[in-house]
Length: 516
Ligand code: AHR
Image (cartoon, rainbow, N blue to C red; front, top):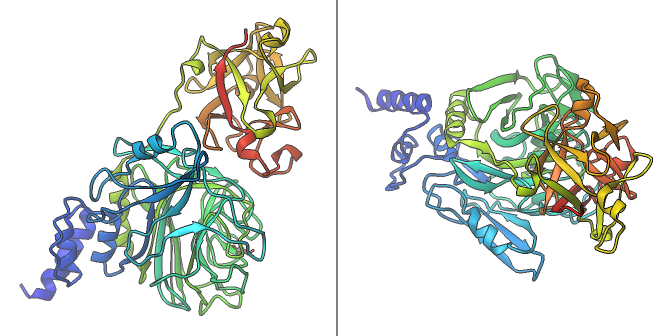
């Protein structure tokens, strides 16, 4: 067999299996390699396909089989010290226990997401831009716990206002050069503002015109583009436009996707681009668009600038939210076969949720929920005589009735047994519920609507401490205090209590010993 034929067949086999060793990847790329890495990462597959990673970011695992360096850096609040978080083994999973030990008794933020490609394209705190001041917020390091391959790890939790950037990159596509990218997001965490992105953007933090970006967008913004259903959608942020298909506006082939772990792909080449996505836990990728560039001016040829953004738009628009676990950018336009092999690697990595557990949040327990926002750390969630819900200071000297009003009996969720409902300790039979997105206590009536309104799912605290409680029927809304009153609130939105300022803190609660 001729060498070229052998190489072609071997490459097809590699891409079809998605599991061949790094040594083979080196051969297929036509380079001599002595790597003995036992596992293969997504970037080994991209290299084998002739479209190598030029940026590789993850807080959960190595993206090259031979990578043994640090994944990210955290900084703790207590003394400002920083610590690099590495891997349990070369090519393996994050050493989350190192973060837990370093951040014990305090909180940490993620200060750097290191580039594993060797090109120095790491992500750090985004500066101010044309659309919003800065520097942006840093992600709380413990707000997105996860398991990967059975190992605990943490994602990058982007609340509105959070952003990372690198304006001085190496090897990232510029002009009309071809590139590919994928990211794994939490498909249940999204927002409608502009713009939760990962990918290529302007190097000066300003909107410099159509075609100056090429990034993956995830969310339910309808400002520029949309697809079927009510979102969220994977779209391409090409600057001054989130594109869901051929042209601006609605494109019928871009479906709403909300897999808990979502693989999102965008790639672009001269007069060619594509959107693909799939469930990061199983199955393959679907192609939602593949074809010519939009016909609006400025997008053909493209004017990519080569900065990298995470969690924000090109001009530092930072009104949206999402969670990022890993992502890469490539040099060259990856084939669908290469991306399919990467998706096989991703599903084999084994992303799983990490449930929040606490003995105080177990059906049958009694609990008091303490606010964590700096204003209000002596305050607890309680109901009033008129059935409204608020926060107020409770202490050992409080009256017995105030203590009872701030105590909740924990039940298995009325609408979802994997979640919780909270019954008033003072008025048995009355449950915490939302109505018109405000919180009340009310007598259960057994209807599906009541049960859903009274069911909340515990999640890791958005501020990096405590617990956040997700509404069962409005998954983008969480128990929040705002102006000392109780609501379910989104991270930005149409109600005054959706205000993004302090949202992460206002929605994070400490499960405390019951007052009554
Ligand atoms: O393209 C959508 C957004 O428009 C970009 O992210 C931002 O730079 C501009 O406001």
